[in-house]
Length: 262
Image 1 (tube, rainbow, N blue to C red):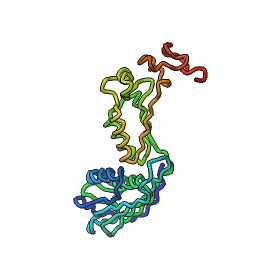
Image 2: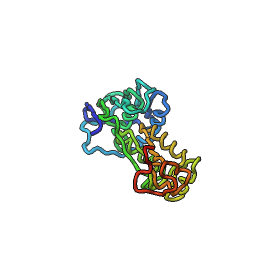
Image 3: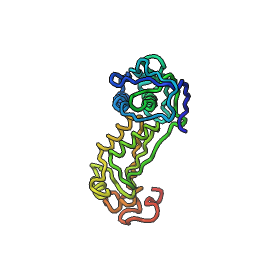
Image 4: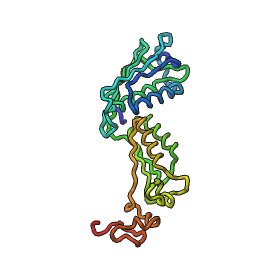
């Protein structure tokens, strides 16, 4: 369990005003796209609870608004940032409230709210208060695309899954001795000769897209690019990179390529 949650509810549900439902939030470079994403996603939820709520409030006024309140909108998505939030959905009334210290906590709360929406006809759990926050500051997944290539769309889908599970780190291992998939404009031969196939490469625009998409989902993307001295196979790619002491022109060796404390 990576989150600590306090839940108080009456196990009831009410209608969600799909056509008129809105999410109100302060403007933010990454939270605003997240809000738009959830507004598109919530009407498509297909969750069906295993236990039917005991109290049916479908006859009451539908829930029309989720208001997001943030204390520190300038907080960066760094290690240890506050990702806690509280979510209140009243049993009577048309407005739910999501309080968070930072935009990143608000994104976790948005995910929780989306998971409380039932399948059609649209309903949402109500009469509840949730106080939630992570137990660990680093909660992530590592994918080694140097060994096994995945396209950009696959990486974006993985980020959505990371967000859905309230993780916050995507460690992206781009290059290794097995392949060099990153197109470096100053050294084009690295990817030209180091990629598995011509279409199995990542451009700078691809990396930027993945990083920005991660930020819009509260996920910090950490690209790992192994330098040539850690990649003995680079010996076969270009002589210009074989400038380490005891390494030039000697090909691939069994030990570490750096000698003599270089």
